[in-house]
Length: 332
Image (cartoon, rainbow, N blue to C red):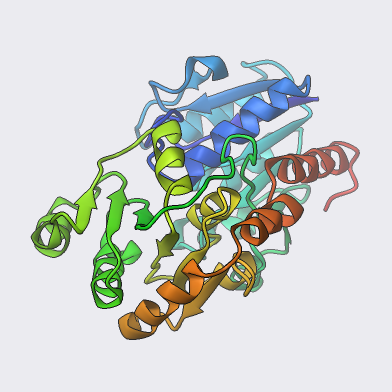
């Protein structure tokens, strides 16, 4: 199929990824290309050269200009346009196109995207990354759930270790400082990895705790991060918002590393009792009790859950099916 894949213009689609949406776009595009599809990616400058992406300049008009160009076939003809960004123009201007537009909902409703939904073309369709997100959007759009996936070959099984790991964007809503506090209560060392998006938060709530026990490892590429995760005893996942999916949890489980985290958003869709333990959101003491319990779980069971339910291949199979249904005019 001929697929137009629209990414965010804010961050390039390349390692080390700024977030799960960039990682999702990268994995989806490369696998579609490997399966023989013609994929045109539109993404921020500096994206992975393997994607051969056309540049979306980070300006307010980039996505509007792209939609106009697509309506005029400036970039060729496509069977489906997949909006994998959070930009409202790809939704609001979908009626300009003579091909269906599929939008992946990566977050709970945000005002700019929610207000664009009623303007979407009749043949537009929506996919949610979890049942939780689908339900959160149900007042505005009907969506099909396609869970995010990880590549078990890339996130390979590891032997574990003695320390805990936390990875992700270092921002208040991801709450790495609560992971630190829980690990200190549990008497378990912690390694933190990820980009510092909020410098003031990092300096106030993270840096004062850094020591031999609590280490900041920097913003790691996939290979380095995988090696850290697969040699950790447990992965801490501490969302203080309605987590749309929990990709870091799935990545850890693929490595055989059980999860101790907060039961927020879609976390309970990803982590079950065979692969981790979840505490009430914000309850640091309960989270601390979850850590040793998760460390005792079977690493093989955690890995098996990802292979059965959250594999990269399963995710791309589902997107291929959605593309074909839309291109045939059947809707979702």
